[in-house]
Length: 390
Length: 231
Ligand SMILES: Nc1ncnc2c1ncn2[C@@H]1O[C@H](COP(=O)(O)OP(=O)(O)O)[C@@H](O)[C@H]1O
Ligand SMILES: [Mg+2]
Image (cartoon, rainbow over all chains, first blue to last red; front, top):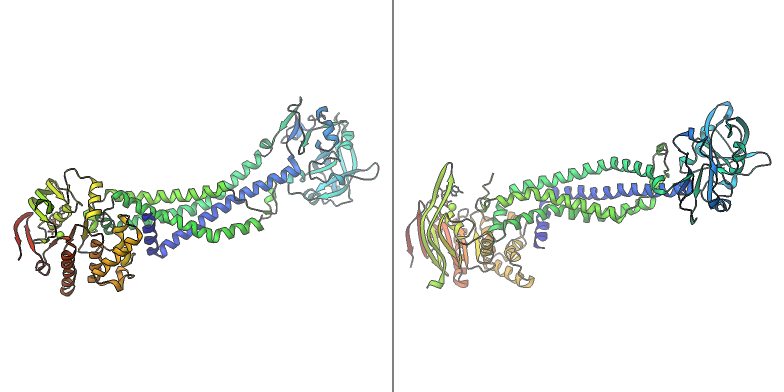
């Protein structure tokens, strides 16, 4: 306790230099917590959006289906398994049939994914209730990204050409009955949604699907032959990997800042141990052991981090809370990562990040304070008292 | 008389490694000092006064011989017992004052008591008393850079005395002071010696100090050349 008191006095006596170091360290605390909070918030947000729009509570994939290989789409289809047929009819799981197709907007040619989805589904936010049209016309939905790239508007008619189960080309006109806005590009860019039953008819694949998205509270059979269950771990792997890459990149900024602050602490320690030899000798003459003096100087260096924590709390807590409330606008083009991103991200500060940050800064500051202080234990007190050590 | 002995030095030799060989700074010193003495080691610069004081204060150890201070012998002494001895029984006064410049007068004087973990109320009284002994009650909140040399050395005396040690070791305490201030601090120490029965041992070659001493031990080239008591 006495060491803390003395360290505090000594640091306060050092004035501006102490304040600068404390300030940089306090910025490190706030920045590390903020940046990590931002990535965690993004992760949170992106997961929630993807669950709502794309992945649901996991998916069954027809065993041939590989989303990265469009050539598999032609073979990746099978009848919706009887085990989940009722759930599908009730809209609690959403079977989706997938095919490559070509559209001809304004005379141009564009290759797309055609997705058939059960109109009655209640699993994804895709507004399938808008998939209604007059008799003999196929209704279709497009996301805003798709609508923009193909210049589609509600009420537009669009020629679609596809191959059926036998590989025979066929074509029909669809009517855009709805344009929806989704934070998840994977359900939007380069694709058009139509009713599942009409698509099954078009492709001559009655009752079939490529993948089946599960909703909340559905009791799923553990295993369905011919189908592969993909859980959240699998479906979010790409998102996790990307956020990890981004956050590693982002951490360089605050690690440089922290390194600067630590260097300043180290430098201060080296200097004060050199300049305050007489003081060190005097402490020893008054009955402190050299180990206690090493401890005193270590605490003194570490005190920078303690004071910085107090300062960080003063301005950091309001600042971080304010960000948590208002969020941070994402720059244009974040979409191009191809993964879900909202316009505003609300940072999420977990207890683990906060304690981890405090520990990181405290421990590293203690280490850089201790390293120069060790030199004291090799000092000769009679020479230190006279300030003779060079 | 034996149990009144505070310092007992027998055949003390101190050598320092110099270049390839050794330099003998103290060469066969035998001395003893009793409780309440006001005595001094006197001799020219380089005669070994500081070295002797440092060994008595357990800041340094003998090469040969035995030094016993307040019952603690140099033979079985380790860093821990040495620091215990200094903490509990010895006060140091240096030529250069060695005050902590960021602490106030009060905090400087308080320091030895913090090491002794004295309770706060008791501590406060002891600090105020010590500052009063040296006549600096009005400077209690000042910091060393605002004090004159004489005032600084008086703070150092209060710091050495605050724990009421059995022994105060003062190495050239007047070397940086003018005549008036030298007399002032010596009178202060003389009074404390009488009132508190504290043993004072000086190392000095300053006539102003020597005049106050009750016993003068003269060193030359690391040997005691005379040891006289003054009436
Ligand atoms: N650490 C040391 N290493 C080598 N020589 C030393 C050391 N300390 C003191 N000496 C030498 O010992 C002699 C006595 O020194 P000191 O005790 O400081 O004398 P005084 O205090 O009487 O002036 C001097 O010649 C000094 O150079
Ligand atoms: Mg000397």
